[in-house]
Image 1 (cartoon, one colour):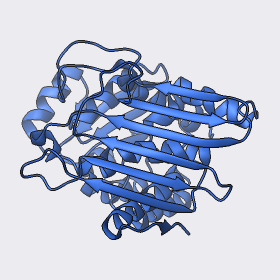
Image 2 (cartoon, one colour):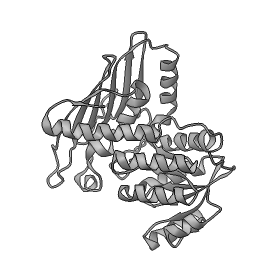
Image 3 (spheres, helix red, strand yellow):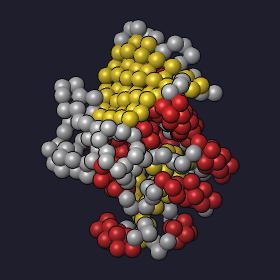
Image 4 (spheres, one colour):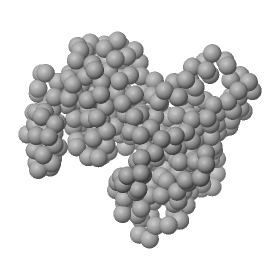
Length: 327
């Protein structure tokens, strides 16, 4: 694997909303430094690179040609992830890529093969996997402290206005991607998928705002995943972001709403520091443990392939109202 040197120099490819979280995470990582950025919008490029005091690139080719860049962080639109990642790997750059890393499992497999052939890291931003409580839960499972896992519950519940929903691909593809790779981290690969979907409160948007996915495992363990963009849950023990594991010797409950800021964000009147800090924890782990020390990520492209296969099976299951086998 091609080594990186500290500080790890990073350039952003794409300056959409999520890039701001990546930038904040790089700034908070002692072993990393943001040195440049590129986007197709020249006004946004100038404004942000002036504010951040980093290098603007005239085009993506110019970014890739900069020998001082060790890592390309792809935060551009989903549709260009596959192309941008392959070009970055061909240019000898390590890659961090926002989820989903590509549009199909086959494209992700191509990216994984290209990274392996080049001896480079290509790491999906599976940021939820790196939360401290997730690491604690994973460690407890590996140590056998929870006994045999019998059931998992993973949820994301928040009201998504229709004007914002039109920028995404429905709650399954956009939000439940996180829930699926989290379930893989704890429970492994399921053998059967059953899903149901609805669109309850949109007028024009045809995407799902309510989806449930049931996962069955070879051991008999089960899990339920819930994505709900049709309503808020501000009750005690909110399901806004809830991960629960029940074992024969113990259990774990991980909430993403233990801290709230009453300030407007893009999606409403609240901000969630726990969500924002997932990027900080993920970036720090990727830089210090993967790029500098050569360790594998907690959730990589192999998990991304399986996640996307489960998404596709869930869509088919909901359409046909039948369980689907995961080979």
